[in-house]
Image 1 (cartoon, helix red, strand yellow):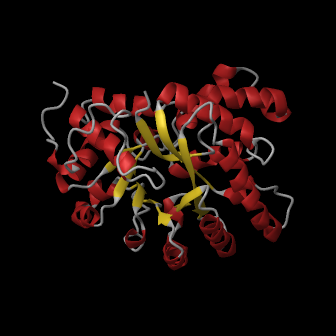
Image 2: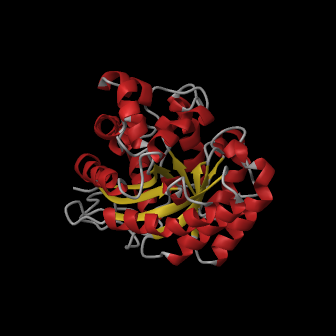
Length: 351
């Protein structure tokens, strides 16, 4: 029975360690020699990092091998695992298409090649064998020039059959010097009818209220309830949803203890702000979406009614889910009420 919608998963971080290691053993001699034994590779790949920037460096390892020829290989295994082990009904995959194009090409040639990348990802993720509703979110990147990011927005607008929105990634601490540029790109994207999310308010250095008016969902956003709770009423009025990825904040050193998220959930529920629970990088963490729910539950960070509210919120805020609500046969028992998240009590958890 498919139960979950996943709104925040990076293509680069979606490859589980064993599949990536096996690929290295067969096709990447240098990396195979560096990691001849799987346990050592898993320990390296999944260990916590000290900062978000250090953590993001791991994406380059995967981006290097996710080429136009290998993407179907990785996506098939991603979809197989998501359907079999995670019970996903809906999946949004996000990535920067420019970073999957051949590096030896010129910038203009790589921009042109991005369209083929989107088509490859789109075709590879539509499998009758594993019938998950999928769509793509194309990520602008803080380290890419304006011309490339503008081309990514244009590409997203030109591929509605495969793309449901745009994002801004690359580490939220790096936006400050180009903030006006990113505001213009989001304004342009909204003018093209694109749906929007963005990595902001993940870290203390990445808080940009200037971007909030342009986002329909907020990638992470945990610093809003933790440090800027006065913004929550406006988010509730605008029906903006936080994409909270619990394991990420431990892996990046953003939080010292996952139980700090209790304040995030409590304040958002009290203010009527929806939260979608996500994995961010399920392969990089070696943690699948059902475990994110279970971990929050068993640590007494959320209770069952709040878990159900987050499940509904994920479908409600999905950019390309074809139904106004999850079908009753898919979410048996979860659709008895359409009350907003704020109606669920903060107290009375697992006990």
